Structures are given as structure tokens and as C-alpha cells.
Image (cartoon, rainbow, N blue to C red; front, side, top):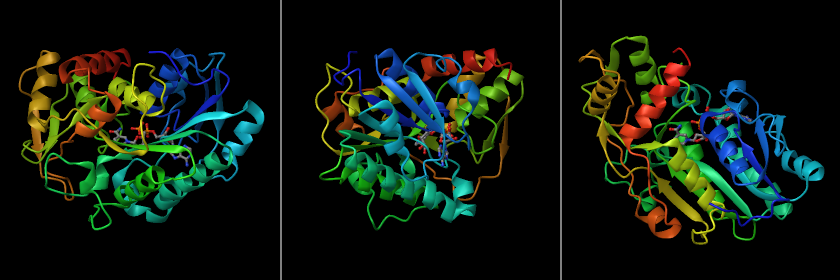
Length: 329
Ligand SMILES: NC(=O)c1ccc[n+]([C@@H]2O[C@H](COP(=O)([O-])OP(=O)(O)OC[C@H]3O[C@@H](n4cnc5c(N)ncnc54)[C@H](O)[C@@H]3O)[C@@H](O)[C@H]2O)c1
């Protein structure tokens, strides 16, 4: 990879102390960019910043994205902004159901505020963390970008806020070129397993490393589309025009997934086999509101960004398990 953006300009990453944001910061630094990370540690962790916190091209601001004037302040201190990567969000779907107004402020209003400010500052690009939750429980599979619309019935304030933000980002005519990446189930090192609603892979990995039985809600035949974090980061970099060999990316909304369905039972068995454990699975009642099946159509991102997932599920699981073991789980 080589970059097209001036080394002088700054890339802002909101949600920098989070799982995906921290991997993105690391990749951008590797590409030679100056990076300003922003996070208020709502769900992020200081440890995620450790591998690059002292990098000479990295700066960090402990602030909320809901604060007006954030980008203006960064530009005044650090110079022109090349790209804003907006990943900060309330990521827990159940929390969003219990706190709809807070979710709207953080997950939608902050997007609009940052987008407008980026436009006023002449920032060329804005890349947003969209989500498969934007599709609600649409049963048409694989999910195509056009399926989410104003008629979608979202299962949570999280899904609706992500949908409305993605739409606004992609439609930002005279502002920065806006790209929303509708990511499916991302997994990899640094994903926090601590809540029952965390990514299923991080929870399974933690249980397996601890020698506990893996717990499945429902019959295990529900399926998901798992995509490894380094592939997602690659999509972010392409969307921002930072990959020299990749085509210019027009404003729009693009799914990011593997394009393959894996059942939760298949996943559990893969993890048990990689950790050399027997069939040690416990089944609990299905959780209300859980989507039965989900898989992305990735034709658009493949055609427009020449992107494809490179890390197989097995390879990604090995890396995740190695990391989980290194944490002492
Ligand atoms: N992990 C996935 O499977 C997945 C899938 C689809 C979309 N996404 C989206 O990708 C983005 C990153 O998710 P993640 O999995 O890394 O989650 P994460 O919780 O690790 O990261 C989110 C970060 O945003 C920060 N944050 C929250 N509110 C903030 C605020 N008001 N101001 C500043 N920072 C704030 C948190 O502290 C955290 O560091 C999110 O927008 C999420 O919705 C994630």
C-alpha cells in the first residue's frame, strides 16, 4: 500500500480507543499518515492505544464526538484535515433500546455535526462506520445496499441511527466525499468479550481459552457473516483513497462482509477444534430480537474498491485465539 494523501494532512479517527478504531490508527500510521485519535472511553480501552500511543505521528484527544467545534479545534492545532474516519458510537444494541435519546445524539447527531464541520474545513473525505443493523430483519439474502430504506423496520435505535447517518454521509453533495461502510460481524484481536452482547467470536474465544463450555442462545443454526478486522481496515483505507493501486471511490454506501454465511454452531465447533477441545457446548433459550440469518452481498465493494476479504475465518480465528491467550483470558 502507498498513500495518495499529503503526509502533512491529518486523518482524524473517532472511536480510536475502540476495537476497530485502534486497528485503523495503527494501519494509518503504517501508511505514513498523521493521525489524531478521539475517544471518550465510553466502551474503548487505554490498552488498545498502547501499541502506537507514543508514535511521533499520533496524537490523542479524550473528548466526546458530541462536542461542537471538535474538528475546528483539531485543524487549528494540527493543520488541514485529509479525512475524518467516524467510528465512535454507542455500539451496544440493548443499550440503544434502553437509551434511545443518548444513542440518537451520539450515533446520529454527532455524525451530522462532524460532517458539516468537515465540509466547512475543506476536508476532502469522510468515512463512516455503518452497520448491518441498518437492514433491520430483512429476510432477503444476501443483503444488498438498496434493501435498507426509509420503510425498513429497524430492531433498535442503533440500527436506525446508523441508517440515517449512512444516508447523510453518502448524500453530502458539496461537502467531503462521503463513504459509509456497512460492516457485518467484525472480529479479531482487541474485541472486548466482556458483555453477553459482545461479538460472539470474542465471547466464544474467551470461553474456549478459559476451558469453559461455549454458550449458544437458540439452536445454533442462526447464521452470520464474519469479517476479519484487518480486511475491514483495508476497506476503510480504500474508501479514503489511501491505497494507491485501488480505484477512486465515489460517494456511496457499501457492504463490508465476507459474503459467506456461517452458523453459530459451525463457528463454535471450529473454535473448539482449534483449541483442541471436545464438543463442549451449552444451549440456552433464543434471545428475543435476535436476527435469524444475515449475510452481505459484496458485489458493490468488490467492483468499486477492488476490495475482497483476504483473511479466512479459520486464519482470523487462530489470530483471535492467540491474542485471547496472550491476555490470559
Ligand atoms: N464490531 C462490529 O462487529 C461492528 C459491526 C458493524 C459496525 N460496527 C461499527 O464500527 C464502529 C467501531 O465499533 P467497535 O466494534 O470497534 O466498537 P468499540 O466499542 O470497541 O468502539 C467504539 C468506540 O467509540 C467510543 N465512543 C463511544 N461514544 C463516544 C463519544 N460520545 N465520543 C467519543 N468516543 C465515543 C468508545 O469509547 C469506543 O472506543 C462503531 O461505529 C460500530 O457501530 C462495528
